[in-house]
Image (cartoon, rainbow, N blue to C red; front, side):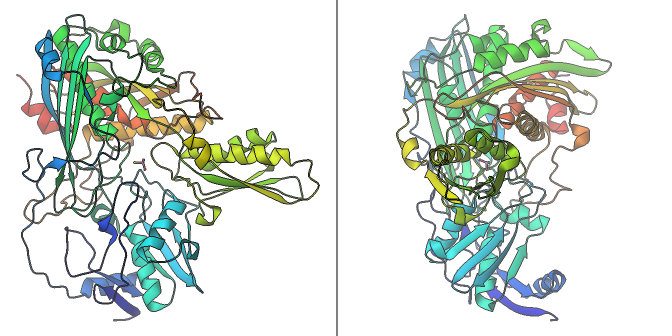
Length: 635
Ligand code: MOS
C-alpha cells in the first residue's frame, strides 16, 4: 500500500528482556510482539510504519490478522477461585489485637461490601513517542512521568547499557499514572526505529489509549468496624480484593488508610489479587488509597449512623497518638486541623445528622464528609546546578512536569536555596541524561526533586567565592534519605460535599465541594490549589461517572472512548473550594510533603456519604449511577 515502510509483528520484532525487579514487580505487559499469543483483548499484534499517519492507519486497517480462540476469563469477583494473597511490596498485612473478640465486644458493628469499577486515567494528551538511533545511542522523545525511570526500563527491555539510552519528556499533557512506566508507544516506536533504521513516531488513538494503557483495577472490599457506644473504635477489619493480570504483579494498596487513620484496639488488613486475562492494571490517580478510602470512609459514616453520632465527632474521637499498626511516631499529623477548619468553613455545625430530612423543591439534599491520609516522603533523586559566567544558574533535574506546574515550583525552590531571584534560574527538566530522579508519581515528585536541588544549591553556595565560572555541582539524595528516622509521614485531608438527588430521575448533582488539606509546606499556592481542586474533581468523577465496562464474551472494554466513558465535564462540576492548614514536614529541608493525589483520595466517600444523607440509602458501589439511585430508593 502507498507509503508503507514495513510491518513489525511477532516474527520480526526485536527480542525483549523482562523488566524484573522494578518497583511494582515484573511487567510482562510490555513484552509485546514476542509470540503469537494475545493475552488480553486490545493487545497489539502488529505495528505498521508508513510515511504519513494516514497511510499507516489505512495499512494497519487492511492488515489481515487471523486468530484462534482460546478460553478466557475476565470476570472479576473477590471470591474468584484463582484469588491469592497479594505481594507485600507495600508492607505486611496488619494484625494488631484480636479483631473477632473486639467485634464481639462492640456496641455496633458495620459489616459491608464496597465495590469500585475499572477506571481509566484519560489524560488529554494521547500517548505518543518518537524514537531514533543516533549512532550507537537510542534517543526518544516521549510523554511520561519520569524520563530516568523510563529510560532505565527501556534499556532493560532492549538489553542496552543504560548510558546508550536517552529519553526526554519535556512537555506532557497529563498522566495520572498512565505514563508512569515505559509505555507501549515507546516500546513500539523503538522496535520500528530499530528494524527500519529511521525515526519512528507512534501516537495511539484514543481508543488504543483505553485498550492498551493500564486502568485502575476493579475492587471488592469488605470492611468490618466495631465501635463502643461512645464512638471509640474497637476493631477495623479491611479485606480488599482487586483484579490483576498474570503478566504483572501490581498491588492496588487499598488498605493503607486503614493502617494509619484511626486508633482501634484491633486492626486487621488483607490484600487479595485475582489474576484475569486482562491488560495489567497499574497506578491511577491515588492508586489503592482512592478505592480503599471510599470503602473505609463509607463504613465510618455507617458507624456514625448506627451510633447516632456526628461523623465529624466520630473521627475526632479516634485520633491515634502514634501509628496504629506501625507504632511509629507521626512526623506531623494535622488531620484534626483539617477536619475542624473544614467543618467551620463548610458550616457543618448546623447539620441535622438524620438522613432524608432536607428538600429543595422536589430534590433531596444532603451533606457528607470524609477524611483521609496519603503517604508522603522524598525518594532518591539527583540534581545538578551550574553557576554560569553571567551570574545566572542552570538547574538540571530529571523531573517531569505533567501539567502540575512542577517546573514553576522547582524554580522557586531553587531560587530560595540559592538565595537569588527566580529570574536568575534556568530550569531544565525531563531528560534522563540529567541522572537518576524519581517520577511525577506517588505525590512525591516535588519533595524528591526539591531535596536534590536544595542539596546541590548548598554545595554550590560553598563555592560561590570561586572565580572560576561556569562551575557545576551535583547532589544525590540516596544516602541522606537512607538515614532518615522511621516515621509515619502523610498528607491529610477533610473533604465536605453537598449534593442533591432527584427522586424522579435518580440524578445526583454535587452542589459544593470543600477540601481542607495538610500537605506540608505549600511551595506555590496557586499550583497547589489547582492540584487539590483537580484532584477533587477526579474524585467527583469517580463517585458519579467513571466506569470501564467489560464485555464478558469478548473480554474487551465496551466503552473505550470519551463518548462511552464519561469523565466529569464542566457542567458536572460545582463550586470547588480547596485550602491548606499550616503544615510542614520536619524531616524535609523545604518542609514539603506532597499535594499530588490527596485531593482525589477522600472525595468519592464524602459524596457517597452526602448521597446517603440526602436519600437515606447507602451507595456502596461506584459510580453512583442513576439506575442505582432509583433501584435503591425505598419508596
Ligand atoms: Mo500517580 S497514579 O502516583 O502516577
